[in-house]
Image (cartoon, rainbow, N blue to C red):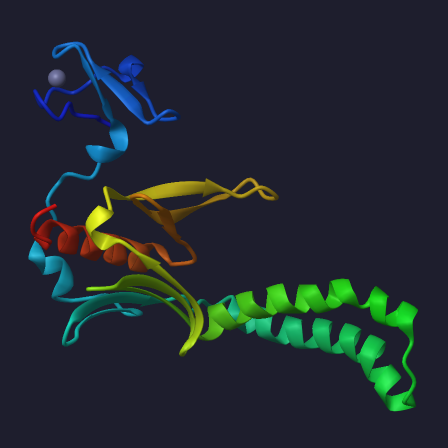
Length: 217
Ligand SMILES: [Zn+2]
């Protein structure tokens, strides 16, 4: 990746770039700068909003704009049946049998807790892959929403204070693969994960475009 000095616009030599600390040093200007603040300065054309790809949307409302994407994925065809069998089998066996017998069994119930937690985690992933969406809502109050229909997780953030919007790779701990996230860096760091490449690129470019349009930054 080429990193340009924000002052003289020269490409900074690779050995003067430290991605880990987010710092680069320009020998020409004899000055340092934060990489995250220059990496995404390329302007994005308004065309980006004209034709959102399938599974993404851009909406203007009275007092806000909304950029969103579906987290639907074919993996749902596997996850949903798997979850029904796995959760149904384990929870049915552990708790269903107690209910059927009308007798509470403490040991069995404690044994079942990991299966309950697993069902919650797996269940939310399965639901997101079948019906989920991610939306960034920008207005007087801005927030990131991740969820299914009206249910989900809503995190307010300060759009005016977003310094950079970029793509970041996340290493998967268990497998060797990596996946990508959109990172909005400001006083808080917001991450948007779980989108296909096409959707992720649309959402990222739309956000960059909107940021460029936001006056008085
Ligand atoms: Zn320079």
